[in-house]
Image 1 (cartoon, rainbow, N blue to C red):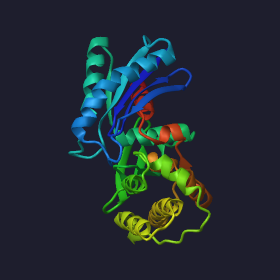
Image 2 (cartoon, rainbow, N blue to C red):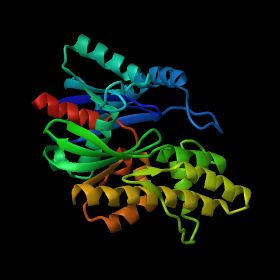
Image 3 (cartoon, helix red, strand yellow):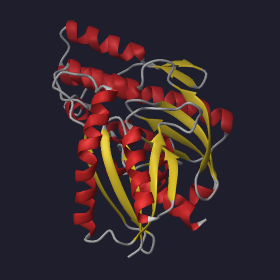
Image 4 (cartoon, rainbow, N blue to C red):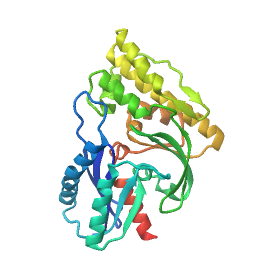
Length: 313
């Protein structure tokens, strides 16, 4: 068996994955970082500690799933959040150090990528759109730490990216998570807020705040807080939050397609796994593609896929 190992230690998830270069199969294992009840995130020092404790368990689980990891030919790892100068977050040092140790001991090639590149690759893989690895397309990365749209040019084994739109303040995942905590839901709150929103049958009308292709999301949290203080039903508040985020993504997409042409659009990141958002965007854009749920949130699968392509080159 020929495997490529991928490792990703992001802000909220410890993950490892192996890509079978013969069959194209991906096996992955991941664990969320623990967040105390009522808190809206995790400090980087705590994230580093938890990744250090969890990564051995994740890799052990991956070995159990595969039966044998002796066929690993190369290792890929996410070393930074984004493919730009000075992009850094301490939590990625855990995965990077582990990957370098394994590479040295096992005498294997080590390929380094950004966390964002991994998200894009995982979305392409799970939506059966890996053909875009050699094309130009638009990629949205919408999560707790990032709300960006990128002009992406695939080069066969990775990506050349240019940010063309972003949130000017709060990130989409932050707006969702903070609203979820506000409503007494667990963190991260995306899945729970979605379940609550599905209980609301009312039609929500709200306009996004746009500046060119960029959006502003800080008003969403403030509006949700006012709705709660005014006695609005929690399912309505949940649906308002998700609808407001969705309309902002639509506003960004419309502006980008108008400026850059009718390119394929890939939506990646945990926020884009929301079925309410996916349903609306799928109906609006024929060229829209989404990562499968298990590949939407932080994962090492895309890193393993990119490492396999780099190794082939």
